[in-house]
Length: 351
Image 1: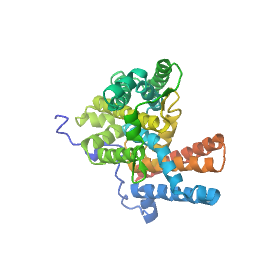
Image 2: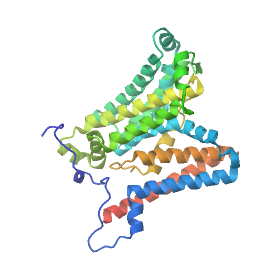
Image 3: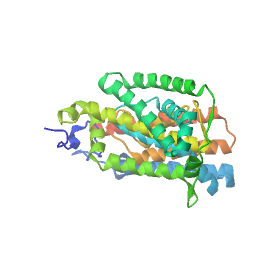
Image 4: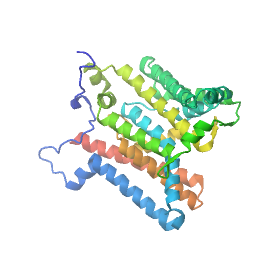
C-alpha cells in the first residue's frame, strides 16, 4: 500500500476531530452537545471576545471603540497570528516548537544585513522576502530532522534551536538594530487596501490558506492522524517522519513571513524581535481549542485566540495596567483553557 494511495481514515486517530455521537443509553443535553462541538467552542470564543470588547469600551471609552484602535489590534495580531497558524499544525501533529521567536529574530536579522539590503536595492526587494522565508524554512528543517529522524524530543530540540538561533542573530547583527532602507520593500508592506495595511491582509490570507490546508486536503487529514496516533498512521501507510519534518518546515516558513511583517512595522531587523512569541503562539493555539496532545486542531479557534490575547493586551495598555498584570491574567486564562480541554477530552473518552 503506497502513501499516495492511502486516504487517512478517521478511525485511525485516538482523538478524532469529529465529535463523537452520544452513546447508547446515555442522554446528552443539547447544551452539552453544543459546548462539546467545534462550533460551540468557537462560539464560546466569540462570546469571550465580545465580552472583552465590552469591558474595553466601558473602561477606555472612545479610545477603545475607535476604528483606528481596531486596526491597531489587527496590526499587532498579524505577526503572532501567522506564527500561531503554523504552530497549530505542529501541535495538531503531536509536536511543539519553542524556537519560533528566535527563528523570527534570525530571519529578520538575516534579511536586513547590509549585503542583503544591497542586493535587494540592486536586484529586487523580493530578495529580502526570499532570504527571510529561506532562513525560517532552514531552521524548521533542522528542527524537523532532529525530531523526526534524530529521535530528539521536540521540547529539547526546539529549546536548543531557541538558544542557537537567538545567538546567531546576535552575532550577525553585533547586537545592533539594523535599519531597513529598501524603498520597494517599504512601499509594498506600507501600502493599504481599503484602509487595511498589507500585513493584516497577509494574516487573513495565511489564515485562509491554513484553514483549507488543514480541513480540505490530504495533508491536513494526515496531520490529524499523525497527532492522534502515530503508530496507526504509520500502519496506514503514512510516512510519519517525513510528514513531521514537513510540519516543522511549514512553521519555519510562517516564522519567516512573520519576520517580514515585524520588519515592515518597525523598519528594523533585530535579534530582540519575537521575544516570548513562542508563549503567545502556544497560548493562542491552546485557547483556540487545539489539543496539546495532538489529534485535533482548529485554525478558526487559533485566530480567535490571537484576537482575544491581542485585545486583552490593548485593553490593559489603554487602562495603563502593568505588563506583570497582563502576564498574570494570561497565565490564568491558559490554565482555565487547559482544564476545559481535559474536561472535554474525558467526556469524549467516556462517550
